[in-house]
Length: 290
Image (cartoon, rainbow, N blue to C red):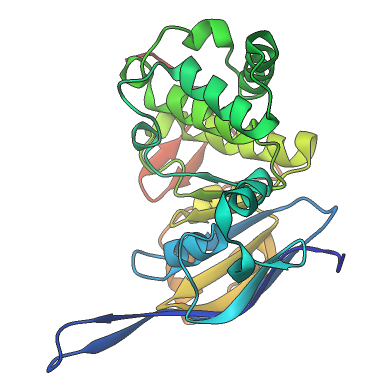
């Protein structure tokens, strides 16, 4: 093993649109490189506005988008070599996604616990009902819920915050090494966002899971990230330690983003409110069921 969990090497992605007479090439991601080390779980935030290429990069890491050039290696295995259901399942054992809209992550006609039980059976290889139920309950407890709370309920019967927690629990059932979270709090009520953000810190610290946190929100990235990468028009314009970069940004684009928000003083344990692009975010607000 080369000591790297994820090795992204000069990855680019281009798209072509238009017809024969007006064809245009769009560079969505341009020669991006970074690494995540084995045995050093961290939260890496990929920050940028809409169209910066951050979601396309996330999709390539999840192996749902193929790079035009460059290589992505997970535990030393090139993602381009993954083919067939067995290889795909082994990959998903290690890498799990968390999407922006939790309501699109679940079949609205299927009860939540059945979805979770099926996921557990898929990754554990056991059909034992009681064993799967115990694993699902344990995963839900890690995100502040329980199997009893979600049992017999459909996705629409849970709040957005609750359902995003269920989505995270579902990801944990695969026992991944890496979670790729694409704008995971942007569609959750502002008063509940910090509960999800704090949960990612817990997954890093207590379970040893590395997290790629894709966002446009500097405030939450500043709060939870170990490292950040700032993307503009497909390229990484600045990267490094999160607090170092955001407290003293060097690139004009990073400076512009920094001036748009009031960043919290995370070293102060009494600071329980952060201010993001969409307004104040309070971690103390209770969660309500719709």
